[in-house]
Each structure stands twice: as structure tokens, then as C-alpha cells.
Image (cartoon, rainbow, N blue to C red):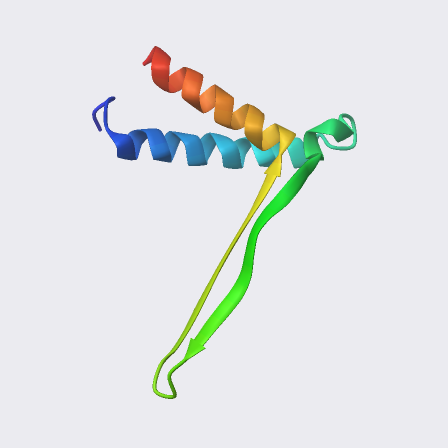
Amino acid sequence: MKRGSTFFLILLILTCSIVGTIIGNAFSSYFPILNYGESIGFGPATLDLNLVSFTLGFNANLTVAGIIGLLIAIIAYRKL
């Protein structure tokens, strides 16, 4: 993958955010601030057409550890 690709940036951001959240959950007993966050999104909305049913929903749980991971990903991308 080329460094300048948007796909690489998105992949790096998602990976670091997930790893940051996992590390935050692992160390939450020692540093409870890492698990502090908010959940944003919307619940499932269903469109039923008798033949086909579509359900769409989105939920993101933003924590301090995930945001730290996101910042590390952006800094790492700029350094590459």
C-alpha cells in the first residue's frame, strides 16, 4: 500500500482506535479515565417491503483511550 492512499489512512485510524479501546479496557481498573466516553449514533430503523426487509443502524462508543489511539494513528500517518 502506498503511504498517500486514503484507504491506508482509514485502516490505520480504525486499527489504532480499536487497539486503544482494548488497551483502555484492559487498564481501566488502574486508570478509570481511559474508559470515560460517550456513545453516539442512532438505533435500528427498519424498512419492511413485505418481500425484503432492510435494517439500518449506527453506534459508536468514543472513549478517551480510543481518541488517544486515533491521535497516535494520525501522527504515525504524518510521520510515514
